Length: 471
Image (cartoon, rainbow, N blue to C red; front, side, top):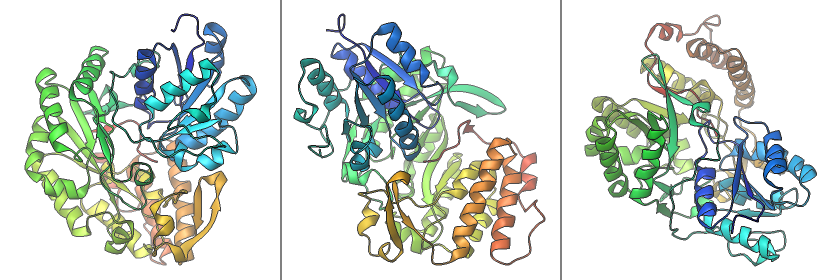
């Protein structure tokens, strides 16, 4: 099929500084169906590269933009407008979590179609339909302006992700340990999630379901990555222990084949407690750290978000991970309508007290609750008094904190974090500045710009990736 046809263009808009799994997986399905692929990753390449490839290899009939996260959506919308001008005959499809959540806005703008959920089969069928001259609205799982589509939730027959069209692994985030940087890559063992945390973008799309990627597909992907020089893998699963019976055999087999390979994974606090007996094996198999969505130390915030854990659970999970020798890297949502300035100061105190300064990227302390269309928070009783208007350009509902000091603090912390990133500032200095801002906001004495975190600079840096996590 591929010889005489224009290629399908896949555009990754942002995927945490990692070689994008969402593009590699889609490319595997499309190549198996006989399509030629060109791929561009806007995290490491200019959009001009797409137009250069179109001139060299043929103008694509289909350009599919991957938007798995909020940042990617902002990047993708700007890219799509230019693609529309440069390639006016191309069909523009947005796919991923944020494509479906924002389908109405996208389809009123540059998008011709959107796909959410298990996107690969609808994407292949869309490519076939366009070749045959059929309307995209006839393809199951593809949403258009004339026909909204539900998330595609069906088990797929996975090929191994196809990564050849993407930039080399060396251009992406690296794993840092002991002062050494090692090439890193992301793989997927499962998608979706069993849980319905109210602020998460996954429940509106997957509705409490998750789908596994076959064990041999994951292991073959890892083999090929190791062959390309990868020394660390990130399991990009929304929650690695949604199905421990599936992923732990993968971990064991991976460790047998590649004993020096390290990895990290994202695991819910409640799963860390429930499956605590697996933590020593996780460490022995090369787990360098665990990311967990702590979000807050306020039990009220955790209740409003329906997180499934308490502040006491956070401390217990932290203790269990520490006993196993696995660092915890918490992700946070410190700015919500239910957390006040004392809660924020308590969060900073925990980070200082438990020596977490280098385990929490400063950007985590600037994260403000997002309420996208379709979010479970839209209908949550606790959110209703705070919800403002829908802001399509920002891809969220607006909300204001009942204490104006918190909105001011959010703006100030966001500025501090952005300034620190531009200047490659030491995290301990950044934390000190954030602490001073919070103390000043609470009307308390400050530390003169140094805060309590400065001594952390002298300590050895824990294992981490070179790209900070944010949404």
